[in-house]
Amino acid sequence: MINLRIPQSMDYVGRVVSIVRRAKVTVRTMDVEMKDTAYEVNIQVEGPADEIKWLVAKLDKLPEVLEIREIPIQAAAVAAAVTKGNI
Image (tube, rainbow, N blue to C red):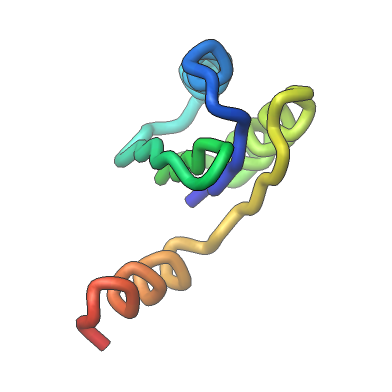
């Protein structure tokens, strides 16, 4: 899962989507949530490790990306379960 923060602008969301479309990965889920003065974007992707690294590097080069993290799928699943109160 890729987690990033961008300023609140749909133009920036469009740029993120444009880059994700160019990567040779399968997008399983993509959530955009408004937090304070920024959007938090969570993208769950599957594909070759080098393509995921390429995608993270390309997103990180965008000047509008304030923060980016790559979260392993298992850690993301545990975090979601804890958030929902299942653990």
